[in-house]
Image 1 (cartoon, helix red, strand yellow):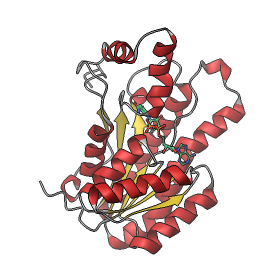
Image 2 (tube, protein in one colour):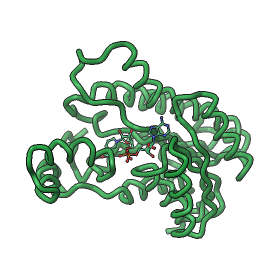
Image 3 (cartoon, helix red, strand yellow):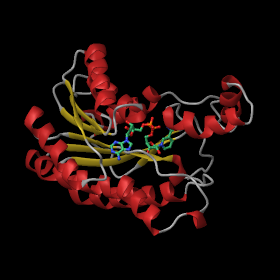
Length: 263
Ligand code: NAD
């Protein structure tokens, strides 16, 4: 299938590694021109170089902390300067801390909502004028499976990401007539540094070997394995494509069947 992404301009946030990197890679493999952003300049530049090497696509890097509005504006400007108005936006950020509800005060809540919800709001607001003028656009937000079923300790993530899902649905309704789609990809258990530092780390600390720990995590997943970042990147590229023009306002899990609810 030709996804029709050749030459399209994309902006992918939090893309120095993990799911953001995989999304940028999938877009670059389809010939999109991609601006990637994250905080760590060295890691970010290295990722951009790797993606150029792997795909031959025009991939550039610009440092950004997505919790800083001025830095959000700066990377958006850099993307427009490099490739013209952004046609594809992939909103992603780090995850907030895990813990029980009563362990978080207002400051932690504000930080978590800035990181996930407000960064998504701001980037959508930045790209919309250009997308509306072009009467075409794709916004894909990376969220979590914790929006579909309870993941203990994930109250900060769940609350912020349900806000994203609500916002995306309302926004999709407002901009559908402009041929702009807004969708969310809900990540299940996908092997990235974040999972290595959380679910996997807990098990390693209990004395399991890495293969044992991965098997233990996989026990609750119908596919009986942890996912790969490229498996999520593939859906991001599809949702960003011409082929997905009639899909909007939805949240699609990439989870090996982990969500057991039917509706
Ligand atoms: P990761 O730790 O592998 O990568 C996170 C990326 O975000 C890095 O590039 C990091 O530099 C960047 N980043 C973090 N904070 C940032 C900030 N303030 N500004 C700009 N860049 C920032 O994590 P991941 O597994 O790729 O997760 C990506 C998102 O998906 C997170 O929000 C995570 O909670 C969510 N998620 C992941 C999984 C999974 O299984 N991997 C499951 C559910 C949800």
